[in-house]
Length: 70
Image: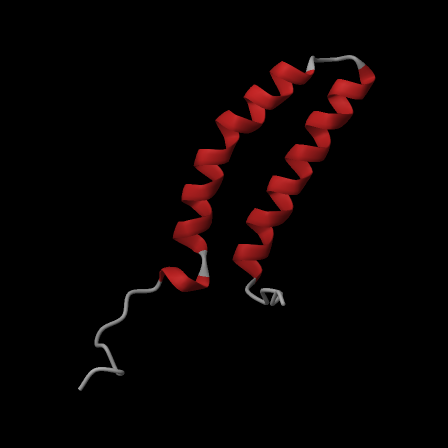
C-alpha cells in the first residue's frame, strides 16, 4: 500500500518531473525530437531533480538525537 505525501515541496518536484516527461513525449509525437533525444534529455534532468528533491524533502531534516536508543 502506498502513502501519498502531503509535503508540498516533495509534491512540486514530482509534478515537475511528470510535466517534463509528458512534455518530452509530446515533443516526440509532434515530431520535434526523436525518442532517443527525449530519453537523453530526461536522463540529464533526472539527477538535478533528484538532488533538489532530496534537499527539499521533509525527510532531509537532520535528527539531533536518536530518541529510540537510550
